[in-house]
Image 1 (spheres, one colour):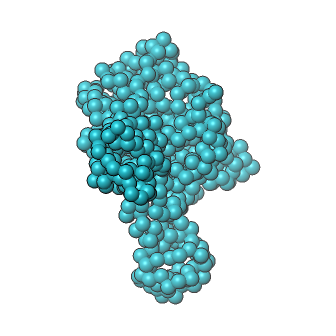
Image 2: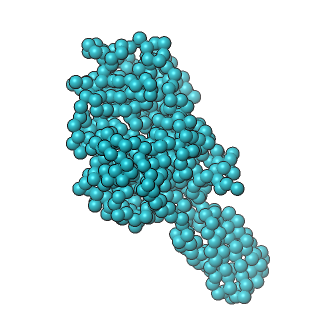
Length: 612
């Protein structure tokens, strides 16, 4: 009989406190940055903080993955090698890696995961990365269910896919616009987010076709309603984006996906199993639209070429649109009436698109009821304007407090025989321990079972929750003795779990496997001598250095390589009936920067280059 597949919910964490909150709210694993080379310059953590997150996650069989997923320069290789040894020593379960030069360092046997920055889009690339020794492969966000299935058939290691959060418009690892325009490399954790800027779309003569729109800014991914199909396609690790997000975002989104994944597992217990232990008790009702979002999209999950008009971009604003409340029915001075059933609160933040198309915010001073609020300042909002709640004061206040608890179920068996009192604890993680202490006990004058069970259930301050207890109710056991026995046995259970916890190891590299390509361009991000040596070991003959190392940028250098297409977004796809709605030659202009848009209709992709 085939063993059930472990399904992992993988959460982001900016710091150790958020990592612990993610575990409490149901994450099976957390990814977070260390002190450097973590692809988010503003989300670094000390070794002590990473250790604290590891120690807590491991109590529930959870895992901590450290992001070491930037390009590494030659003069940094030894520094990264020392970092990896430190991370292994403090208990990190795996490294998320982009730069393949890291595989040629003298590393401890720590498991390696291929980052989405590795640009994994094909079965051939997946087979190659598995052969290099990666234990888990993070696939490109752009893949369809069919493409994921193809990669699953080509590989044996777990496959990881993004399921929620902000979307990069470029294939990850293949965006050079920030490096070229701003001197800030996305592959080094310093992305300037050029995709979120407003642009004019112009023709070859410089005439403005679309003015001041965020034409490269995508909506946020949300695939909570497609989890079962993704599992069937071969995904076993579901990744939430957001290492720069606050704790409230992480709590809410993790809790929502925990429930959604558990429902699928409950329907198919013979196929799927949770990747960690412990039940989660929430003090709030999670709701995705109450956290930061630019509107939601399934992206390309269902088809490589979405139909004309299928909006996956948020071209009007890159800001959070939050929760759609309803339309304004009346606005007089600072009194606003909204056609909504939502319960509003003092301090809520509301937003709307004004007459100039700007996404504007107002603050609720007092919620009167029935959709009526008093704003802090007089505001003119036309009737029928859609109102969004971008800050839910009551909801955010709930998340600012202790909003969840996570507990491991434990069964107890209390025995008294031959002047020996013993307590056996068996938990859902598979641990079983017995602790014995000498005692001279007397028969009880009245039944003691209920009192003894209550005493064994006093597990406050621990991660355990008593499920069942078998006790000798005919013996009187002083509360002090029973409490001491319980504490000692719980300590023993903790030690047993630390000793028996399964640890993944790095897989061996198959050095006979050839690279699926023999030539690499600057977009393949070879930034050090060890990465170059690895590729040459696997049959690559021609290697251009990464742009970050000083390679020359030309008019043909792709600054962005995307599956998203501006023409398709604006309803003028060359393969559709409205192709003539836009001229053939298109450019994006921001400030003094002019970019050329090239549509590759054969592959249904788009590239952005400098216009010279």
